[in-house]
Image (cartoon, rainbow, N blue to C red; front, side):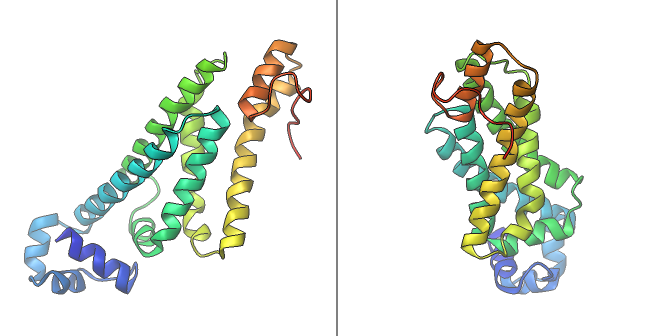
Length: 209
């Protein structure tokens, strides 16, 4: 039944009715309701499927290793690409489930937990405090999640620019306070490592553009 629901959402768009989903599955509406409970139950099932596939995609990207900034960039790009590949499904989730709903919160939690674990590990490897990893992860996932429906409708070139803008925003947010605080050279070099630069090559990274 979930597969039939997904098929009709992708075909007819986010405003598709439960009646259309039941017809696609070859069942009556009461049977569909008995299976999912109500529209919220259907949303939860769709969100779980979306999250399963998204986490699988992100896991593959993050497994490649690299610097903390690489992990964040991979997450942003993968998340946006994933949304752009299936705009009707993402629109269905965001149209029918409020931002603070348990359905979307669960989706965000799963993506953020994966990114937080990776950022924490990479920060520790770079000799940096891993405490903010969870906050940064939720910030990254939250930003991408909220701009996702808009980004999905953009041409490829414009979408790529939005992705780079998001990555720059995160990088500036991570590096700006450290530079402004006038940290010792060792900490500055750690900041360069976070940005993806070679420590000692090029001095203190810029906090903004």
